[in-house]
Amino acid sequence: MQIVCNTIDFEIEEKSAVAIGKFDGIHQGHQKLLDCIMEQKGQGLKAVVFTFDPPPSVLFQTASAKGLMTKEEKRKAFYQMGIDILIEFPLTYQTAAMEPQDFIEGILVRKMRAAYIAAGTDVSFGAKGAGNFMLLRSMAAFLGYELQLIDKVCYNGREISSTYVREEVESGHMETAGILLGAPYSVSGMVVHGKQFGRTIGMPTVNLLPGGRKLLPPNGVYYSEVVMEGGEYKGITNIGYKPTVSEERQIGAETYIYGFDRDIYGEEITVKLLKFKRPERKFNGKEDLKRQMMKDIEEGMTFHTEIQMKG
Image (cartoon, rainbow, N blue to C red; front, side):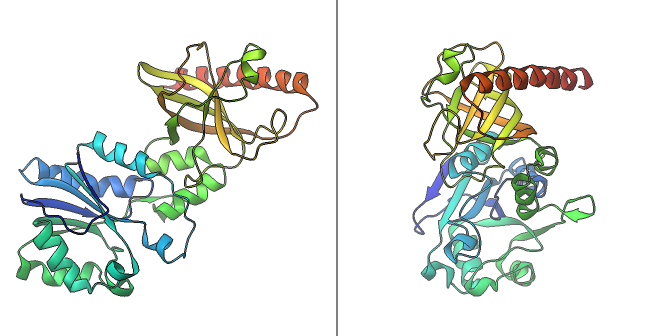
């Protein structure tokens, strides 16, 4: 997959099918849009995703800078889907002030050679967000591209959106978040060294530090699955600061993987958060923590066994 970033000076040589959006979380609505351009790829067009970096809400400080996906997670997801070109269009006060008509003609048509554009009814671009689906439709015949309206996907009577997913993640409702995303909410990154407390009590764990730009659910313990090179494993994950064994305030994701004792420091893994179990709390010493960890692990194994039986 070709990634175009940090520049507005680019040009796609072949005709393309373009999906426009923020793609935070790549939820079911996004997936419906992306399916359309992948169908066009089968007809010979380049499958292109166009998104802004940073998102308008971050540039204009109308929302949290924390996203459902990091840039690295998003790039990996698009690569796995088979997207040909990802354009992370640099959004500045200057580029954000571009006239919507100029954006369509200059960027979408001339630079990207868009022959097919897929967009939702809430698509927004150009100065003050004045560019919309109606403008795209009005210019389609003149500029020679096909425009596909992508209807919203709903769940429980509500349109699926990044805001909806965010609310569920922030509430710790991982099962609902997973339904909206079409897959469990996950945290990816490189395994780093922790305090190694778990190893001293026979419960070794793997540690991720997601960073400040990743939206995490409430601090606590979650039933989880871990994906790494070589397979997928069941586990139980603590999101938080580990208050019993550390005074540091760097939030992390620490996972105990059942029956796993391999050194994977420095490897890339993905932790899927399946269900909230209990909130994080400080225990009366390490023995009290050990007893609770053993209880968490036992109940987690039961949870995974029940899920496997249902599946």
